[in-house]
Image (cartoon, rainbow, N blue to C red):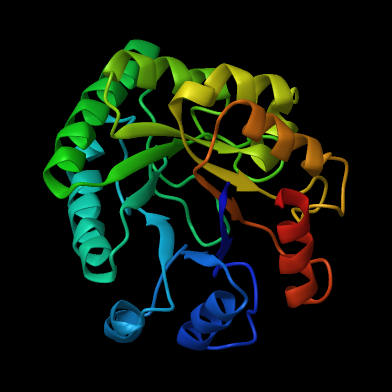
Length: 257
C-alpha cells in the first residue's frame, strides 16, 4: 500500500508553519516540505505523530553548470543536516535554484556535452553523500510549458537515462504526474517505464494544479497503474486545493485508497 503525504507548502496556508504540519499529521498523512521554519524543527523532531515524508535536498547553485556545482553541494550538505535533525530520509533534487515563483534562476551550460557531463558527475557525488547519510535523493523533472520555463530536463526519459547510468539505488526518480501530463502526457505508460527506478511520486490535477479529481487526469487509474507496477513507496499531494483544504486531502486519499 502507498504511503500518502501532503505538501505543507500548498495546503492550509492560513495556518502558521508548525500548526500546518500538525494539522496535516492529524489528518493522517506524512508531511512533505518545500521549506521550513528553523524554530519549529526541534518540536517536529520531538513529536511522534509527525513524520516528514520528503524535503528539498538542494538550494542555490546548479548541477548543470560547472561553475556553480560547489554552491549547489553547499546547499545539499546544509539540507542533509536538517534532514537528520527531523528524521527525513527522502530528499528531492532538481537541477538548480528556483525562485519563489518557481522560475528557473540557476545557470545552465550552453553546450549540451558540458551540461550532461556536469550533471552525471554531480549525480555520482550525490550518490556518495546519500550512502554516507543513509538517505535517498529523488530527481524531479519539471514542466516547461506552464510553470518552469527554461528548466533543462523536462522529460521523464532525461532523468531515467541519467539515473540508469549512475547505477545507484540511492538516486531515484521523482515522477511528478502533474508535470509529466503537461510536458508529455502518457502518464500510465511512463509509470510502467520507470517503475524500477521510482523513489517518489507527486500528484496534482491538470489544469490548475488542484487536488486529484478536479481535472483531466484519471487518478484512480494512475493509482492502479502504480499498484500494478509494484510501487509501494510515497505518493505526495503537491497541489493547491480548489476549495476546502481538508476536503482536498480527503479527495486525494480516496483516489489512492
